[in-house]
Length: 295
Image (cartoon, rainbow, N blue to C red; front, side):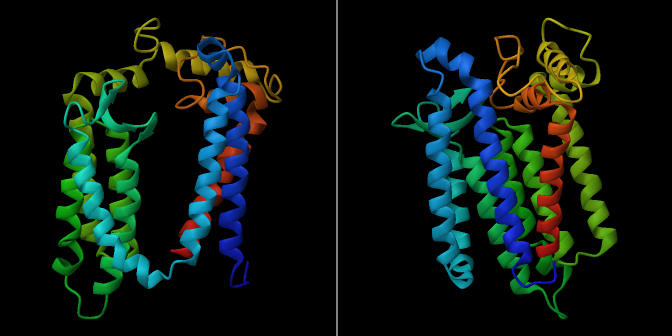
């Protein structure tokens, strides 16, 4: 771990392991739905493999770009994502799916600008704070224009509406401020304000409050809002310690909605068991540790 490139090698290795495992589990969890809709068990899996390959190509290209260039391009990239976040809200331009208008669909390929915005904001925020950090930097230098820009991006994402991505963006902003050395008193104040806003957002819209109620009491409406969570719990319980075996899930046979994306961990737990689930969580935990080590 003391070697100069140890953290880099760990990040790459963990990312490759999670990607390969993810592709295997997508094939297993999506095969039934893919056969029902397209007649082939490999439809969704093939598209994911293509995107994974493209991702590795982009990753390699990004490695060759000097950090100075990335910092120079960070603000134009953020500005472009803000424009995209505004355009996606316009009916006829943005596509609505499951109650959220957050996608562009171009030639059959869906693009979610909020995911690009998270990356662009993280890079731009890091560049901004690294530039202004120093002995003579003031609190205003650290918070402006970072916080106003974060509020603008957050409002555009809330309008979609997408609570999950909003929370992710808040975590990115807090992480940036923490590593930039924001005074603890101010940091805790921002955390408290963000928490209060998250509670208000969670309880003010019908679909969000319904999700919170389902999380707190999934048995209240077992055939309605609580159905998916209950089916996921049954799937995890069915896996036991060792799992039913790769490809042997029963929940994916139209019992568990969105088995191949939002609820794929339930399929992992069912097929690979408690040990497989712990291994996946352990990989993500190690990934987070290495990221914090680098930061």
